[in-house]
Length: 194
Image (cartoon, rainbow, N blue to C red):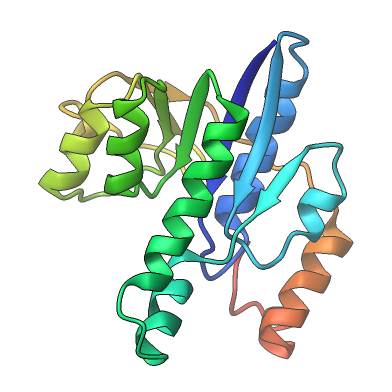
């Protein structure tokens, strides 16, 4: 059985997490694959509503900020990085999948130990040269057509594979509760999209 780690960062909403959960559930349908989520999202009700195994870390940016606020310099980020890499090392995945955001130091460490990497890249009109270079180091870059159109700006980004929309099968009640807990009544007013 091949282990696939899918990483989702902790963003402002639930887009990264719902996308990686949808992909992991699709992978789980293949008996030869064992998908595991590694998330920085503070809202894991969505994951708990699935049979998927997961590991939760605090968002990297918060650990770094809190360490600086506490006068620890970069120690908080170093601790986060060591926990992240320890988890990956223990699972010894056959593939590591980033969702949209690529941590350069993590990408380099995974390459150093020979773990193939893929990226689920949300299509966007502009990309920096650094992101393009990181994409070229991936085994695959999957670009879901969730919002329609585009893709030509990705032609020099390595092994790009367009795919159809990633349909996010999730429990609306769990998502609604998570949004309410995080944003209060603003979520109900439609200020935050999933």
